Amino acid sequence: MARSRLQNDMLDTPDWLQLSTDRLLSGDYAQALVAAERYRTLQPQDKVGAVWYAKVLTQLGCYHEAEQELMRLEPCTEQKLRKYYLVTWIELCHDQGRVSDEERWSRRLIEEFRDCDSGYNFLGRCLRRQGKVGESEEAFRFGPRCEGTPEEAPYNRGRILACQRR
Image 1 (tube, rainbow, N blue to C red):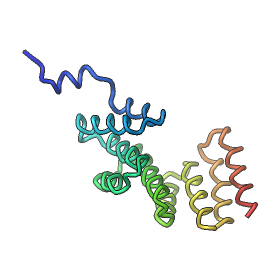
Image 2: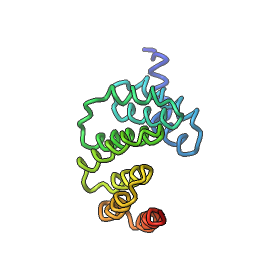
Image 3: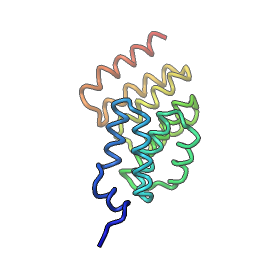
């Protein structure tokens, strides 16, 4: 029995999501988008792929499309995916300069994942942009006590010193 072209593509091609990830990390945003779109076509129900697609769109400055993609996923309740989903919202709001929304999403990440140091780092960055230096410093200090790696501690201390320079 002959296979359809789509079946051949699915069996004879790389992992499109991994390919998109690799392309984005290497700075090839156009190819990252092409691979992410291909993955979404092949796996339209995959929520991880949808969040990744929104992340790629955000990197390309396609904010409206990224936001629509994320809104289609609400409510996103799966624990592992939820963290990734919230971080993608934070990045989208940050890139658009929507600091109040960025703060809201950062606080939600911290509320739902108390041991997530990146939530405190996102919050610290956002508060610093708003001129809330004391609160920013507090967030940056708390982050390394969570799940962060030892390599992140000097970076966060640098952020605190930058806040103190005022």
